[in-house]
Figure 1 (cartoon, rainbow, N blue to C red):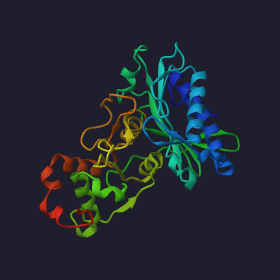
Figure 2: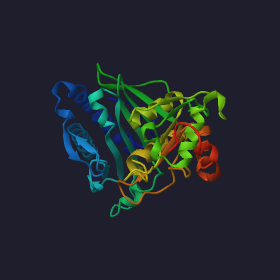
Figure 3: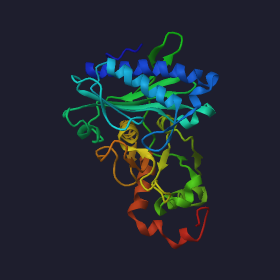
Figure 4: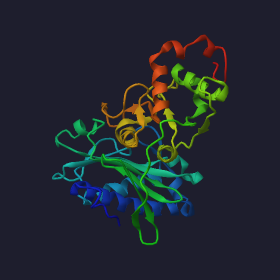
Length: 332
């Protein structure tokens, strides 16, 4: 299925990654059949975060849950479950996972994925103490289900990439990612929410829209897929910056993405590719969550852009300048 012996030195982590790969193979088959049955697109209510939950979300969660339990994983923290669950009492590793990120895109046949991280659980009576620290990862990564099924992960020494060969269901090592370029001309944000953005984000995007005639002296392109895995993969492959800030909408003051099983694992990957990942000001890696489903603003990608955004947050004068208030697309 996958050969990790030369890459992963910890046999416990290797076993978990193999289990995740087995689950991803099963899930990729379910995804490929989803359009023929139509049932996978049916809404099954709301998950613990209030997001619509489709049948394929439930199937994905069940696939990973069963496989990781068989692999001897101790603890399982999933987007689709209210609390951290004990899988194996003797297990000392925990997996935090978003089993199917971007499931709202199923109907559109857009790339979706699975985000995961692997940690050692030191306090089995209170596993949340380890899960809620966004750091000390033994591994983190994602599967992306698109034209190809890919695995991109890190064990703390750069990024590693595998591609699934559908003929024999084996993951084959492919060329490793290069580092994220320090500069870019692409950004990803949902501009339909611009009227709700905080002033620093509005100021930053205004500068980008000014293009080569503005202070940045170059033109930018906008991208938005509404799939965190797809956005991450594009940025790791060719650079860019991603923004999902907190905003003025009800329930969005801390953004929409979850710290434990989305932002933490992705931030660790991004840092391994020499990018940056913050909540606008503070790094995600090294921070802590206070609950399994806590949200955070999330900004990551090319160093120069992430640092520029941080400067806007830390300098209220630039974010609230009279110039900004009297011009541009984002006037209130």
